[in-house]
Every structure is written in C-alpha cells, then in structure tokens.
Image 1 (tube, helix red, strand yellow):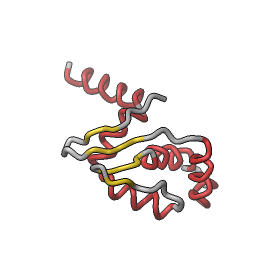
Image 2: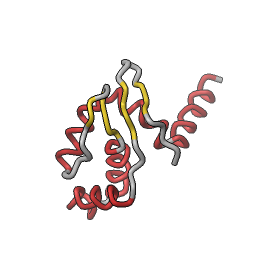
Image 3: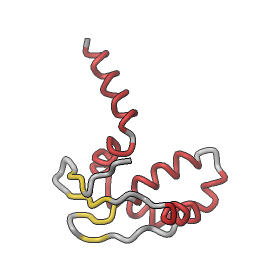
Length: 107
C-alpha cells in the first residue's frame, strides 16, 4: 500500500500518516480484544487500521492507540471529514465503485 505522508481534509486540516507495520498491527489486534471474536472483526480491524495510521493532526503528534477506547477517541478527533479524506487512500476500489455507480446514475 502506498500511503502519502499527509492528507488534507476538505475543511483544511492536515493529517500526518504512516503505514501500520506488523508490530503495530499486533498491538491493534490486542487492543481490539473481544471485538476480534465477533462477526465484524475484519471490518473493525480494517477501519481501526485506517484510523491508527494517523500520526498527527494539524502538526500535533498523536500516539498510536493501545486500547479500543483510544482508537474510538482518535476516530472522534479525526471526525467524519478526516475519515472522508482517508477512505480513498485505504479503500480505493470501494471509492471507484461509488464513483462508477454515481456516473451510471447520472446517465
């Protein structure tokens, strides 16, 4: 995956990014705890990986979350605008499908 060093949200906030390494992923799985035994484990882990790739917000460093609550808090801090900026980076195929569907609907 090719992750840019930073991305700017529609509101003008800058999110610093890094690729999650295998050690970070193991920490994230541990933080997930009971979420990993549910049917939505894959979805939770994928979304959390996207959230945890953020290393700074507007130049202010953020720590890698170590608990589900810390992941949730970072997601809240990033906000919908930040998630909208991150989603095409982490889910480019899903974004392309949405664009294709929008174009088809317009025609």
